[in-house]
Amino acid sequence: MSPLPARWWKRLRLAIGLGILAVIVDRLGTGPFLAGVRALGVVPIAIALAVTAGTTVLCAWRWRRLVQALGGELTLCAAIGAYYRSQFLDATLPGGVLGDVHRGLRRGQAIGNLPRALQAVLLERVLGQVVQSMLALVALLALPLPVQRALWPWIAVGMLAVALAWQLAHRRHGSEHRWDIVAAWRRIGWHAWAAGAAASVLAIGGYVLLFWVAAAATGTLHAPHDLLPLALVVLAAAAIPLNIAGFGPREGAAGWLFAATGLGAASGVAIATAYGLLSLVACLPGGVLLLVDVWRARHP
Image 1 (cartoon, rainbow, N blue to C red):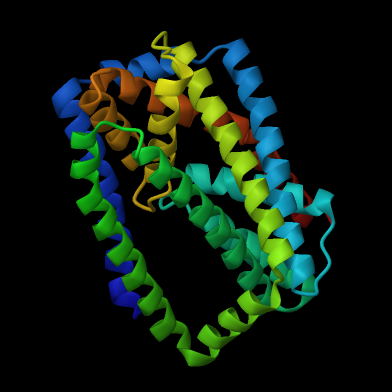
Image 2: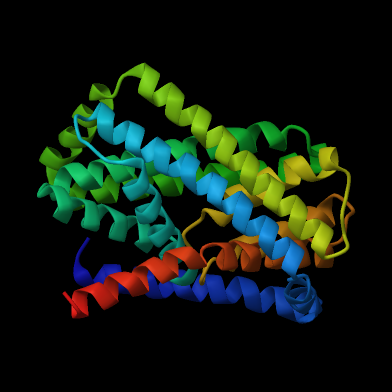
């Protein structure tokens, strides 16, 4: 991808994220967003910090496991710190992937092998997204049939978009890069993939728990069996790289899903907003680590 299309793609992603938020405000006003902000409190924030600490350890362990399977060495402590940094950057910068790029670049500098470091980060993120997508598809079957019929075409479009992005990545990096990724994929044994998938399921369980906490904090708590499939689908939508500091597709998906299931669009947007803010606050340790990095660089 040449610099010009890449620049326009970034602008397009920003415009789509803003557009989604603008449509929500036009239809529902600012009330649901304000309700999400008011949901912040000492107890929800404390729970969010604890839950995110657990999910961060699980994701960092998943990354470390794949690094080891590729023949590298990475301590769990270093992996946790790097993952906190990447989560903070993902939560505060447009697109939601720049933190992972930062994690790969830092790892590459540390080991003196940038391609291998980026491969491990890419495969770790792909594993997490695949597990999350599979859980979302299973959850979709628990939703009303009209909702399923409305979502399947969008899922097909999403799959085509992923395939297109994969092809563009191949063209950009060339056949050598493509075969390096395939070779790395094959080199990781099934036991490492299984362990990583199990860690992913547990981490997603933590995200769902935080979604439930956000629902309770907004005063729109529903039965767990009603909220579980909605949370899994909304969280999958949140992974779409069209967000602005995490906001955009998540709120749009939550508003539409809650409205389609009779729970109210405003409730869905309020819960998604509260979830996003709680997640952002829970990632602040990563921001602190980044500030420490800057201080150390200036005071060697």
